[in-house]
Amino acid sequence: MTPETSAAPPVAGDCWNHIGVWGADEPRCPRLAAVIHCRNCPVFAEAGRVFFRHQPPAEYLKDWHGVLAVPDAKQTATDVSLMVFRLAGEWFALPTENVREVAAAGPVHSLPHRAGPLMRGLTFIHGELLLCADLHLLLEPEGERLAGDGRRLVVEQHGEYWCCIVDAVAGLEHCAAAALQPPPVTARAAAASCLRGVYTRADGTVIGCLDAAALFVALRKALP
Image (cartoon, rainbow, N blue to C red):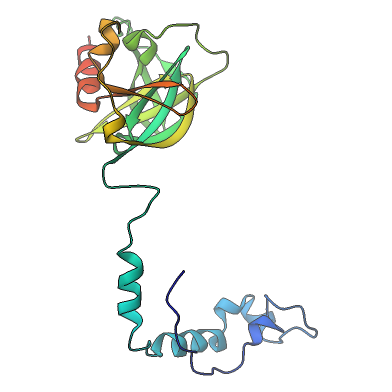
C-alpha cells in the first residue's frame, strides 16, 4: 500500500477522459484533428504541469520512507540472480550480470585451420562478429542434445564478449546464496572446473551454477 496524498488542485477539466483519446463521449474533441493524441495537446500538458507543481502533504516523505524501509520478502540482498539454461539433459546457470543477451539460433562461420573442438567459429549478433563456443563440448553434459535449433547466449566479463551455444533457456531465477552447495565429488572434471556450486529447485531439479571467471578462462584456452 502506498502513502495517501492530498487531493491535487483542480485543473482545466479532464477532457482527455471524456472527449479525448481515453474517453468514449461524442463528439470527439476538435483539437484531435490537429494534435492526433491528447499527449500532444497544450491543455493536457498544462494539466501535467499543474499536477507536478502541487506540494505533497507534510508527512508524504516520512510515509514513503516507512514503506521503502520494509524489506522485500521475495528477495534479499544475499540472493543470486541467475540465467538458467539447458545443455542436453542437464541444467546450468550463469550470473545475470554476465549475460548480455539471449538470441535465437543463427549460422556460425567456421575459421579454416583456426577452430578447435570447443570454438565453433564466428557468429553475427546485431551485425557484430563474436567468437562462438559450444558449451556442450566444454561442460560435457549427460544425455542427448535437444532437438531444435537451440539458443545463443551472449556472455560478457570485463568487456570481453563470447557467444555460447545452448539447447534451451529457462529464464531468470533467484537463488539464496546459502542454498549453493559445493559441486559433488562425482562431477565430471570438465564441468567441475567451471562450477561455482549447485542448487536444487523445489521440484528437485539440480542446477549447476557456473563461475563466470572460470568459464572465461576455459573459453580463452579454446582459442587456437
